[in-house]
Amino acid sequence: MVSNVARLTSALRNSVFEEEADSSPSPETTLTEKIDAVRRDLAASGVALFTDDRGHRFRIVRKSA
Image 1 (cartoon, helix red, strand yellow):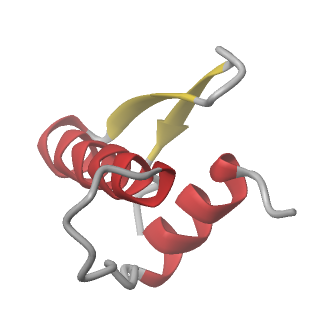
Image 2 (cartoon, rainbow, N blue to C red):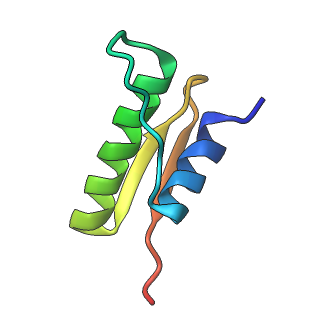
């Protein structure tokens, strides 16, 4: 099983995440919403916070090119 943190970082690195067409709320939809929020925060300030399902908080910092 791949953790949500691994999926988040992978999606952010690749800037590609396949969204499901299903409209029912699911863990995948919640993860997609979190990824979108992290992308917005990174674009705005270069720093984003992410909390996984277990309550662990992660600080994601965009590196300068």
